[in-house]
Amino acid sequence: MKPIHSISFPRGPRLCVSDLDSAEACHGGYDVVISILSPGTSLAWSHPRHHLFWVADRETMGGGGPDAAFVDGLLGVDLAGASAVLIQRHAGFSRSPAAAMILAKRLGASLKAIERGIDWQQANPNRLILALGEARLGSGHSLQALAERKTGRSNPWGSQALPDDGRDPDAMDENLPSNVVQGPWRGAGEGKASSEAMPRDSRLVLD
View 1: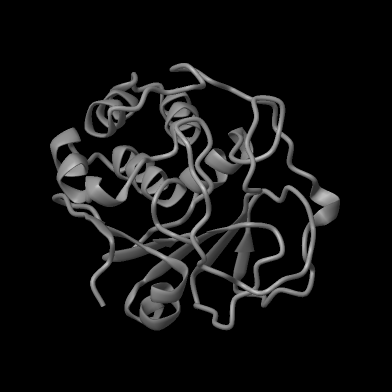
View 2: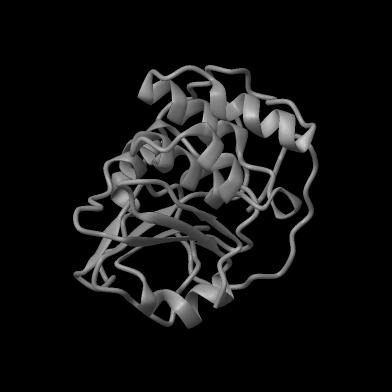
């Protein structure tokens, strides 16, 4: 099954992005899987190298949504020996392509390779993740500028947005399989995974 986005570059793993339904069907073909899910989402599958991050849909500078702890966890995922990595969220439109772009930059991919690997007709990379990631990498604002140029939408957070770390360690789910590595958690809940389309605007993207 063809991913929505696929970033390839020399000496690095192929970074692919898919939506929730596609990931269930194709995750077995990847060496590492990174899931970025809304709290309460449940998956009917697992993977031997599954890194699971819980990120609330709504985002503000004071909390909710992606934060510095999430980006640190993402950049710290062990990709040793991997040739293909799957990054999945509900729609593969905003947060997951932004995560792929940040990982690609950390791994040494060129800006051209990153630009070529994103299907810009199906992406509006999350500006908060890009801002936090580039701040952590100390590598300028080239990804933010690329996203603005390709989508025509500016970054509502500014180029160096650093919201407070809102991770709640008491809300971690102890019942997940032992192979699942949990990332930052912003709230608990129960629910069934869904890939239904959600409303978007230029300031808030709910991918």
